[in-house]
Length: 200
Image 1: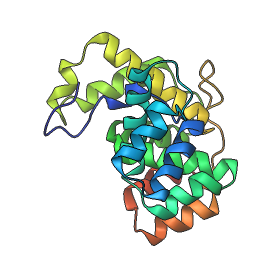
Image 2: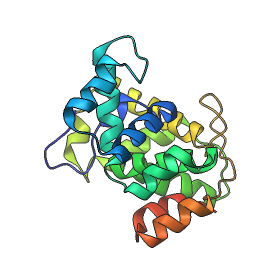
Image 3: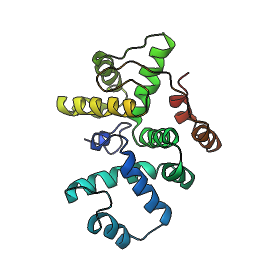
Protein backbone atom coordinates (compact mmCIF):
# COMPACT_ATOMS: atom_id res chain seq x y z
CA UNK A 1 0.00 0.00 0.00
CA UNK A 2 3.00 2.33 0.10
CA UNK A 3 5.13 3.31 -2.83
CA UNK A 4 8.84 3.89 -2.42
CA UNK A 5 8.81 7.36 -3.94
CA UNK A 6 5.14 8.35 -3.66
CA UNK A 7 3.92 11.48 -1.95
CA UNK A 8 1.02 9.70 -0.29
CA UNK A 9 0.97 6.48 1.73
CA UNK A 10 -1.73 4.26 3.16
CA UNK A 11 -0.04 3.58 6.51
CA UNK A 12 -2.67 5.68 8.26
CA UNK A 13 -5.03 2.68 8.07
CA UNK A 14 -3.15 1.20 11.05
CA UNK A 15 -4.90 3.52 13.48
CA UNK A 16 -6.39 6.89 14.37
CA UNK A 17 -4.82 9.22 16.96
CA UNK A 18 -4.50 6.47 19.62
CA UNK A 19 -4.11 8.99 22.45
CA UNK A 20 -3.65 6.57 25.36
CA UNK A 21 -1.11 4.44 23.50
CA UNK A 22 0.70 7.52 22.13
CA UNK A 23 1.25 8.89 25.64
CA UNK A 24 2.96 5.63 26.61
CA UNK A 25 5.14 5.58 23.49
CA UNK A 26 6.05 9.27 23.91
CA UNK A 27 7.11 8.62 27.50
CA UNK A 28 9.34 5.74 26.39
CA UNK A 29 10.89 7.93 23.69
CA UNK A 30 11.62 10.67 26.21
CA UNK A 31 13.38 8.08 28.39
CA UNK A 32 15.69 7.25 25.45
CA UNK A 33 15.59 3.55 26.23
CA UNK A 34 17.54 1.00 24.20
CA UNK A 35 15.95 -1.55 21.85
CA UNK A 36 16.05 -4.35 24.42
CA UNK A 37 14.23 -2.26 27.02
CA UNK A 38 11.77 -1.09 24.37
CA UNK A 39 10.93 -4.71 23.56
CA UNK A 40 10.69 -5.59 27.25
CA UNK A 41 8.26 -2.76 28.04
CA UNK A 42 6.02 -3.25 25.03
CA UNK A 43 6.01 -6.97 24.34
CA UNK A 44 6.76 -8.57 27.70
CA UNK A 45 5.32 -6.02 30.12
CA UNK A 46 2.54 -5.25 27.59
CA UNK A 47 2.36 -1.55 28.48
CA UNK A 48 -0.12 -0.93 25.67
CA UNK A 49 -2.42 -3.64 27.14
CA UNK A 50 -3.16 -5.30 23.82
CA UNK A 51 -4.27 -8.89 23.33
CA UNK A 52 -1.88 -9.81 20.54
CA UNK A 53 1.74 -9.11 19.64
CA UNK A 54 0.87 -8.22 16.01
CA UNK A 55 -1.40 -5.45 17.34
CA UNK A 56 1.37 -4.18 19.63
CA UNK A 57 3.83 -4.26 16.75
CA UNK A 58 1.49 -2.50 14.31
CA UNK A 59 0.36 0.24 16.67
CA UNK A 60 3.73 0.91 18.29
CA UNK A 61 5.37 1.19 14.86
CA UNK A 62 2.68 3.59 13.61
CA UNK A 63 2.86 5.78 16.70
CA UNK A 64 6.65 5.84 16.81
CA UNK A 65 6.82 6.74 13.11
CA UNK A 66 4.42 9.62 13.74
CA UNK A 67 6.17 10.89 16.85
CA UNK A 68 9.60 10.72 15.20
CA UNK A 69 8.39 13.37 12.73
CA UNK A 70 8.10 15.70 15.74
CA UNK A 71 10.57 16.63 18.51
CA UNK A 72 11.13 16.05 22.25
CA UNK A 73 9.21 19.23 23.15
CA UNK A 74 6.20 17.80 21.33
CA UNK A 75 6.57 14.44 23.08
CA UNK A 76 6.54 16.29 26.40
CA UNK A 77 3.29 18.04 25.49
CA UNK A 78 1.82 14.65 24.58
CA UNK A 79 2.77 13.19 27.98
CA UNK A 80 1.97 16.23 30.14
CA UNK A 81 -0.23 18.68 28.22
CA UNK A 82 -3.92 19.48 28.42
CA UNK A 83 -6.35 17.17 26.64
CA UNK A 84 -6.71 19.70 23.81
CA UNK A 85 -2.95 20.17 23.42
CA UNK A 86 -2.33 16.41 23.46
CA UNK A 87 -4.95 15.73 20.78
CA UNK A 88 -3.74 18.53 18.53
CA UNK A 89 -0.08 17.56 18.83
CA UNK A 90 -0.98 13.98 17.92
CA UNK A 91 -2.90 15.38 14.96
CA UNK A 92 0.22 17.32 13.94
CA UNK A 93 2.26 14.10 14.05
CA UNK A 94 -0.36 12.22 12.05
CA UNK A 95 -0.34 14.96 9.39
CA UNK A 96 3.46 14.97 9.15
CA UNK A 97 3.41 11.20 8.79
CA UNK A 98 0.52 11.19 6.30
CA UNK A 99 0.43 13.88 3.63
CA UNK A 100 -2.90 12.35 2.57
CA UNK A 101 -4.47 13.47 5.86
CA UNK A 102 -2.86 16.90 5.73
CA UNK A 103 -3.88 17.60 2.16
CA UNK A 104 -7.47 16.52 2.87
CA UNK A 105 -7.68 19.05 5.69
CA UNK A 106 -5.93 21.73 3.67
CA UNK A 107 -7.74 21.27 0.36
CA UNK A 108 -11.17 20.00 1.41
CA UNK A 109 -11.95 20.98 5.01
CA UNK A 110 -10.46 24.48 4.74
CA UNK A 111 -12.17 25.04 1.40
CA UNK A 112 -15.53 24.08 2.93
CA UNK A 113 -14.92 26.56 5.75
CA UNK A 114 -13.95 29.28 3.28
CA UNK A 115 -17.16 28.72 1.33
CA UNK A 116 -19.28 28.51 4.53
CA UNK A 117 -20.12 24.89 3.76
CA UNK A 118 -20.34 23.20 7.14
CA UNK A 119 -20.99 19.60 6.12
CA UNK A 120 -18.56 17.08 4.63
CA UNK A 121 -19.93 14.23 2.52
CA UNK A 122 -18.67 10.84 1.28
CA UNK A 123 -18.39 12.41 -2.17
CA UNK A 124 -15.79 14.86 -0.81
CA UNK A 125 -13.48 11.95 0.02
CA UNK A 126 -13.99 10.24 -3.35
CA UNK A 127 -13.37 13.48 -5.24
CA UNK A 128 -10.27 14.19 -3.16
CA UNK A 129 -8.74 10.78 -3.99
CA UNK A 130 -9.50 11.37 -7.68
CA UNK A 131 -7.57 14.63 -7.46
CA UNK A 132 -4.66 12.89 -5.69
CA UNK A 133 -4.18 10.38 -8.50
CA UNK A 134 -2.42 12.76 -10.95
CA UNK A 135 -0.13 13.89 -8.11
CA UNK A 136 0.82 10.35 -7.03
CA UNK A 137 0.05 7.47 -9.41
CA UNK A 138 0.09 4.85 -6.63
CA UNK A 139 -3.33 6.13 -5.47
CA UNK A 140 -4.97 4.49 -8.50
CA UNK A 141 -3.50 1.14 -7.44
CA UNK A 142 -5.19 1.15 -4.04
CA UNK A 143 -8.11 -1.25 -3.76
CA UNK A 144 -11.60 0.07 -3.10
CA UNK A 145 -11.47 -1.46 0.39
CA UNK A 146 -8.18 0.39 1.10
CA UNK A 147 -9.68 3.68 -0.10
CA UNK A 148 -12.75 3.11 2.07
CA UNK A 149 -10.64 2.24 5.12
CA UNK A 150 -8.45 5.31 4.56
CA UNK A 151 -11.58 7.43 4.55
CA UNK A 152 -12.89 5.82 7.74
CA UNK A 153 -9.64 6.44 9.63
CA UNK A 154 -9.32 9.98 8.27
CA UNK A 155 -12.81 10.93 9.47
CA UNK A 156 -12.21 9.21 12.82
CA UNK A 157 -9.09 11.35 13.27
CA UNK A 158 -11.05 14.49 12.36
CA UNK A 159 -13.70 13.53 14.93
CA UNK A 160 -11.12 12.79 17.65
CA UNK A 161 -9.47 16.15 16.95
CA UNK A 162 -12.90 17.85 17.17
CA UNK A 163 -12.69 19.18 13.61
CA UNK A 164 -15.97 17.39 12.84
CA UNK A 165 -18.80 16.50 15.20
CA UNK A 166 -18.40 12.70 15.14
CA UNK A 167 -17.93 9.77 12.76
CA UNK A 168 -21.64 9.72 11.87
CA UNK A 169 -22.23 13.45 11.49
CA UNK A 170 -19.47 15.13 9.50
CA UNK A 171 -20.50 18.65 10.45
CA UNK A 172 -17.43 20.90 10.65
CA UNK A 173 -16.94 22.42 14.11
CA UNK A 174 -15.18 25.66 15.07
CA UNK A 175 -11.53 24.66 15.55
CA UNK A 176 -8.89 26.80 17.19
CA UNK A 177 -5.25 25.82 17.51
CA UNK A 178 -4.11 25.43 21.11
CA UNK A 179 -1.63 28.23 22.01
CA UNK A 180 1.00 25.79 23.31
CA UNK A 181 0.83 23.74 20.13
CA UNK A 182 0.74 26.85 17.93
CA UNK A 183 3.79 28.38 19.61
CA UNK A 184 5.87 25.22 19.22
CA UNK A 185 4.91 24.73 15.56
CA UNK A 186 5.68 28.36 14.80
CA UNK A 187 9.02 28.13 16.62
CA UNK A 188 9.89 25.04 14.57
CA UNK A 189 8.79 26.81 11.35
CA UNK A 190 6.24 24.11 10.56
CA UNK A 191 4.67 26.08 7.70
CA UNK A 192 2.69 23.19 6.19
CA UNK A 193 1.31 22.08 9.56
CA UNK A 194 0.22 25.61 10.43
CA UNK A 195 -1.52 25.95 7.06
CA UNK A 196 -3.41 22.73 7.79
CA UNK A 197 -4.29 23.54 11.39
CA UNK A 198 -5.13 27.23 11.28
CA UNK A 199 -8.69 26.56 10.17
CA UNK A 200 -10.34 29.85 11.16
